[in-house]
Length: 363
Ligand SMILES: [Zn+2]
Image (cartoon, rainbow, N blue to C red; front, top):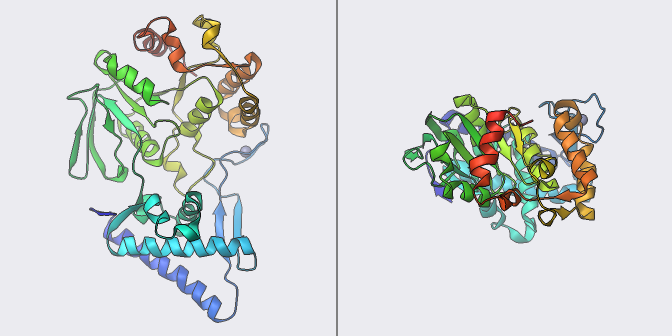
């Protein structure tokens, strides 16, 4: 756990006050022989009714979850919640930061699994109405960025423009990112590090004035917050390039709509402006991919696609995405972005991406 300049002092004091009030109410209930009742707002990113007139992903809670000591599963959940809250309180008092992994290792036998800690942190954010970084809980950082951008994070300067084809880590303390300067025309988000490296090797950012970002698979919170910040500050269009398979499509939806594990601060992470650049199921024909490059969908792939087709936001907001996803199921095949290299190693950076962006072939 490390110490560093932190959230403003008044935010700190307010959060510590909320934590004290919350725990005092629980202790009072217990000392009076009552079971404490804890209400946690529930948010929903999507429902499974494509024709629903619902309020999913609208930042409004759709109900409350009630935790009491009368249910055994809740007893453990509350135990975890209070232990994590105590650690958070300590981090705030000592002005230190810790990762979710650090917290897990403080009581591994009680927590039993990382996901238990993750849920407690999410619950605490909802209860205290704050973002995870306000709790001084940070990620290790997974994302990479390169291209026409310069910014500072605290006292550190990230000057990517000096060497636009070198990978830089996405800043973890996104709330401290300032002085963003860019000469880019667009932001390209790629699902995979291998594609990011391919573009770096092809000097893609030298030839195309852009910023390239990857979350290396499912993006973490800093990567999504950073992307959102760049779009807000620079007002640039953003395109997303993912594998043509159910995981690629799911990752695309996470950038645009957020993940199902909705947090209090989900609204700071969604990027409704993002456009899907590829790879589309229809690209296999449009780019004459040979059959050897196409893999049959597994039974699990098909189940995943069928479930995704039901997500209400696809019908409501991005019908063309849904049509392409349906086509994936009809064709029964998937392919990786790298399959496009069958034409030539640099086909992706020299032809596919520039022609799609210039020709407006995105949805
Ligand atoms: Zn819905």
